[in-house]
Amino acid sequence: MSAKTESEPLASREIDAGDYRVIVAAGLRHEMASHIADAARAHHYAVVSDDQVAPLYAEPLVLALAAMASVSVHVIPSGESHKTRDTWARVTDGLLDAGCGRDTTVVALGGGVVGDLAGFVAATFMRGVPVVQCPTTLLAMIDASVGGKTGVDTAAGKNLVGAFHPPAVVLADVEMARTLPLAQRRAGLAEAIKHGVLADAEYFARIDEQLPALLDADPAATLDVVARSVEIKAGVVRADTREHGLRKTLNLGHTIGHAIEHVSGYGLLHGECVAIGMVLEARIAERLGVAESGTAARIGEVVRRAGLPTERPRGLSVDALVDATRLDKKARGGRMEYALPARIGAMAGADSAWALPVDDQLVHEVLA
Image 1 (cartoon, one colour):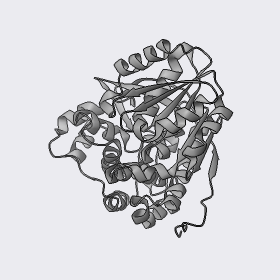
Image 2: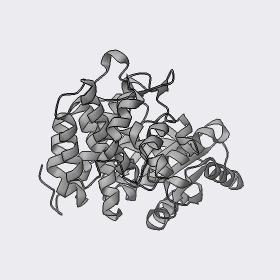
Image 3: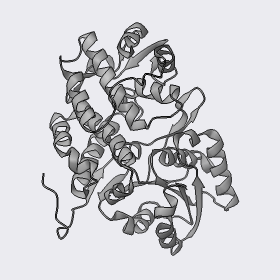
Image 4: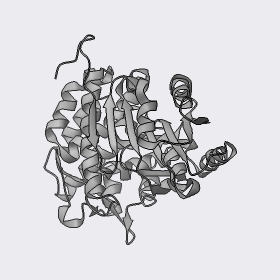
């Protein structure tokens, strides 16, 4: 796939996610207000953003929305450590102070933390108001803004309090990736690599081929990857909205990944933790005999080429990590279940509701 020239416009992509659309385009931020009004017209728009994103993108969106309705802006500190019930309460109180009622639409302008938290605010405010997701990070465009999962973290673990609350529309402007630090671009690619592993070997190979352009935030390459990842995730979610079966495959890399996030005190980016989790969980799959030999090595190769880590951070206790996996949402009957690959492009466990029980001892051995 060759990059587009400056004079050749990029085609926008629109993906059917079931009850809502995902629109992916370059320069979409200039048209977001009209798309928001089309999908979720409101008397009041409550824009939720963070202190990193708001200075870059909030003002033009607020001015455009203010031509149609009243607007309030609610800025939270950036970072996973602020995705808490306390922040949810402060934003909710802010909506009440702004006079918001049931004719309010919440607009999430930011990365995954903003999207999760603003979505949870919308799910619970006045027993539920619409939310529009406007992801500004590559990870949020590729994964976090799609699927309708919202929530906050607790001291016990990540996303343990939340609700399913699908957005009215998702608006992803791939040009926003240009303002991201390189580490954030790398982290976003972890979820794209995951989608290739679980559903599309050709897409996995295409990501590998396009890594230099993707790391450079080339709009054409970025649009292609965001759109294909959204297609894959939306297809899985449409088939299993409430995560009773197939949707569990999207948890690939996340059981160990969430444990690393928790034990490190969120000292690593989410995508970095997912990258490590994917490689280690693929090793578990090979040890169990459910994955083709070489699957973990191939995943690790592409993860490393993307500039992402593949091994447990040496400062983190193996025992603490194994304990933290039990705090995740995937335990059944006291035993952890994992989404494991069978090979690049396919997952194991179709006859086990797409989740396989794994003994702590094996996890301990792989982590060590």
